[in-house]
Amino acid sequence: MFSVFDCYGREYKCNFLFNFEHDNKNFIVYSDNDDDILASFYEVSEGKIIISPIYDDNDFDIVDQEIARRRDIDEVE
Image 1 (cartoon, rainbow, N blue to C red):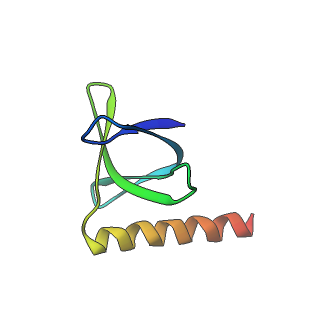
Image 2 (tube, rainbow, N blue to C red):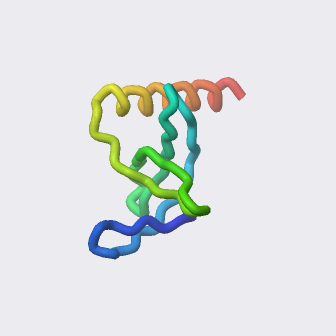
Image 3 (tube, rainbow, N blue to C red):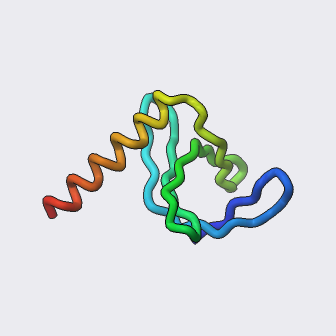
């Protein structure tokens, strides 16, 4: 579990699901307390993980494809 803070300083507890890299972009996929699946870009700066929102539909498609790929792998195992 990790915490995310919004621009107003409010803290949200989230569950880490996985991270991956695609085309030199780092993605993190996680869930919130409502079990919604969320995704963001991330970078590591001075030992801290900084996440930023995904706005581009192509990037959302990449995340959706990775989630589907991992589900397929889990079903085979």
